[in-house]
Image (cartoon, rainbow, N blue to C red; front, top):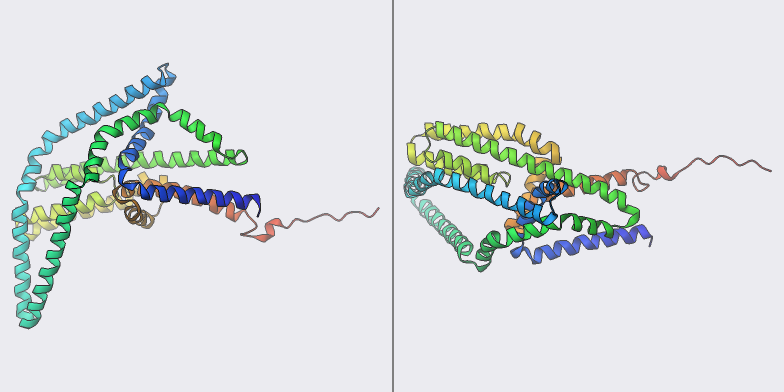
Length: 364
């Protein structure tokens, strides 16, 4: 077996070991993934302070404290603003459930006029059984989320462990990068460095682009839903912006809540259609302008692959997988494009690339 084949098998083995390890440890990955993400975003600021003469440890502590203070101020400003609207939103849930029951009763009545009594009974029993199963499943999920020791551990670790992990990563960032650089095979050093720069540029582009998309979506939906007269419109818009960190989750959740609120608040189809139109316009803007220009051009991923990455990440690593799905897919895209470039330049793709025209040698 050639040395190139050995190297290929080695790297494939490393990737498989990493994937299996992450799968086994997924229950405790959230604070470390959050700490790494924050450290990755804040590392350039620490580097700038270090160039001004501050020691690395002090610069890391200053940047981390500034980040935590800024995050806390945002929460302090937003929580009083949306607290009242959130309480109104919760208070309207029973009325919304009642409206849904009334609508279901009307549908059953229409079916009774069209179908035989036996079929109606079977349909009612089937729907009741499925709804009961759905309620039990949702209740179980919520209970496990609230009471699970792992969930409680993750919440506590996000508050306590994540800042500590972030500080140590910021302090030792340059050292860790330099140490990893020493482990790269020397014959592949420049290639690995080039791909690492492409990966870094892709991740930075994703972070900046996604942050802009979330901010624009929060502003648009908060303003539009408030002007439409929907109660809790401001809180709902901010919720969509926050959940927009995970593509499609924020808008999908916001749409279901907004339509339900409109139905319970107005009671007519006109206002419900207005709210649905707001989301339709928002989706058109996001799908055709915001995401392609601010994210798609930077990570070079088709929307279908983004959807696939979200499902694959959630299946493999749960909530943490959903959070890191798109950045991970962007990194994998960089590596795949590099592999395809090498493949198309190899004899495996076109054997004629190894053919060389040798000049005829003169006879002595």
